[in-house]
Length: 431
Figure (spheres, rainbow, N blue to C red):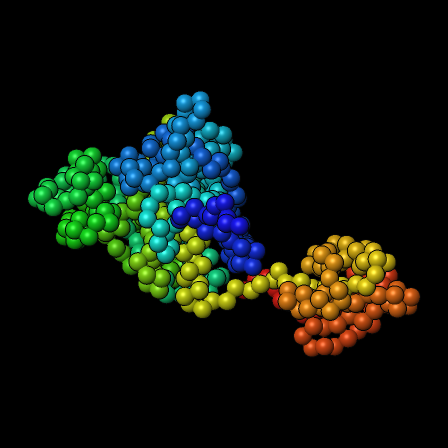
């Protein structure tokens, strides 16, 4: 019988045998978020389209080409979130979180949706971890945010990452820069793609982010924003670098970084690798001091970053970083007969209350098949209960790796004693 349907192009399934990999990196991220004082925020997967059009920017590729937008039965225009920042900013504004004290520090795990050509490291449904901070314009906050990202990479053991840093200034100094860009790109009107031609008057900085090979080549010799920074933006950028130097964080200044979204101001940064091909940016972020105002709120300087989980896993695989699988079965109890099944059922409940993974047969296998299954799932220990074991109220606990056997009483002390045995060779979930 043929399948009714298969997964949609540009999406991927995370199967049970793979999910521990995601859980591991997510746990590291949660722990590092907590260390830096960030608390989780959860926002809807879809928002009013206007939020992304205003927040992300009308001239970005995301808004112009990539959003999944549809009308509801009530006639509202709804969009699946293409990124996490706009939704988080909307929630901060809507719930007046600034009244709870500044800065507001929020972390998130989100699924995002963009319609683009699927390729390695670029899916139509993808997942991000992000940190957002609201209510500070101090450069030390920019440096702290970058340090938080670096801490995640360090915990995961990721090497060969390059931190690229830039400042794209504020609206004041960008006005002169936009004029310089417009004058430069106007010389190449006959070569620019149609999208970049439309950006020439509205937002010429977006041309710097164009993926067209021709536009990218033209952009190489375009004026650099760092030559147009006002004193405030230049001093801010110098202070960010000063704090990074103090923390021992290595970086390179790349004046071509503008990021792909319109809300950025001043600091922008990317963590880049060369080990996974063209899609080498695994983390990107910066400052967006005008975003809350753009969404209708009062001035609230903000900053943040997002890192792609799929790309992060690709980097770890390419660098041979092993992710520990701690979801293995601690105990498998094989049974013979209905009374043995009932006894095993009672014992397993107590073992699971000790926060250990334990299983028994639930499909009606014979003893040999049960033991074969225990070996297949990698059970650390096994126990066989039949009439003889029930009569003497004890059974042999077998270490599946060494073959060593230990006699265990099948009474109220079983779970506690087994827990001690299991924990003696338990590997920590951390690295």
